[in-house]
Length: 496
Image 1 (cartoon, rainbow, N blue to C red):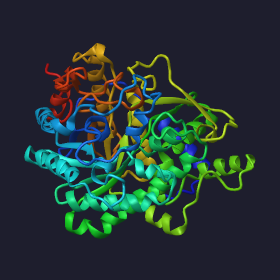
Image 2 (cartoon, rainbow, N blue to C red; image 1 turned 180 degrees about the vertical axis):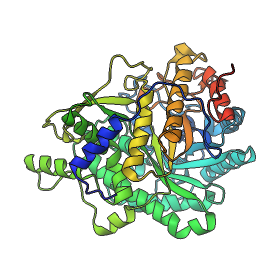
Image 3 (tube, one colour; image 1 turned 120 degrees about the vertical axis):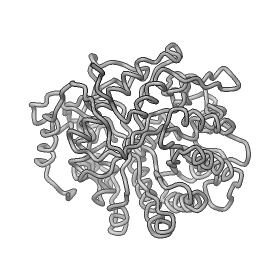
Image 4 (tube, helix red, strand yellow; image 1 turned 60 degrees about the vertical axis):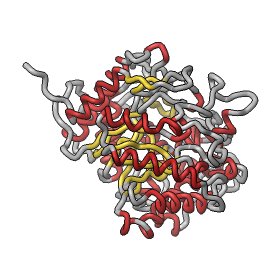
């Protein structure tokens, strides 16, 4: 598909999706025999050990240690779940739940303390070797994310993701990871949720490094995309033949539903919203350039603001070619859905650029996170949108989950309901709609440091007692549910 299709085409795609099956009937059936199940975590959220064994500081170390804490409960990931010391317990939890794979991230500054390849930290390499070997010894495939938000602080000091020099540093980091771990790791994710990295970290300022700018998110995204392409092409060129692995990227997106599906303006606005969210990063990877509607609107608004050049950078022919087709699979992180209405906006920056307003229905069930309403049918719709927009690529669900608080403890029926209904909609997307989905990854294995929300929101299938120095892990009801789901590989018909 060409990225230069018309707005009429976009509206027709959106209309077809809006009219897609929305039935609420539960589907009793099984996933394909080769379907795989797993859990996910991220290094800063679980490892702790923030300043030991040669690890350098990262931007979240600095962000959480500020005199006026930007974290809602004033906490940090200094200890977190102490998985640096308790990784074998985590592997045992994975084994007991019957997973096929475990998605975890490497800490860039644990391996390269200043982010460059001038100094390699052998103790960091040793830690990840031990974790990878323990997983394989227990029949669990490692799926490794190179970057899950914890940029080395030294690189941030020279501009971080807004400085193009980060691209070469990321390629050097990827080379180290492929070289040391690629003999056993066959599933690589370059970057996790670049939208969150760039918009929440550089636009809204609620994540590290805490910047607020209408321009920085677009510069950040541009360099992140180049970094992804560099890491992908490096593996393709120097490692794929000998190691036989795959490289992809994980993009997050909710589903964006038109408030009035019978109003073409609403349908067009909803399509615009998903193109600004998912298409911002996926279009360059699938088609070599940003979505045309982004180029059109941001260029127009930049000119109206009197800027000398557009806030949205351009790829030259080299980078367009490097990006185009730079995937073996696409990772999707999905949690919730929003309703969309069109709105002419003049506020500069990502939110205003798309001329939309989004909100969530008060009727949708809630979680502990203000942004996360339970809307299972939206999961099916975003997977169908990806199928129709990008030619039905191999899709891995790399995160999906539900938040609660301390009060639920291990009796997390809300999470059980969420996983049941979301995975059933994924089954419908596969069996009824023909979506090419191969893996499902529950977020998360254990309760952990939830970024700006600290420890006030829990996403784990295992309860972690953060008041206990031993960080005791206790299975929740959802762990038992997922264990049965994984073992059944779907939803057996009820016994008569």
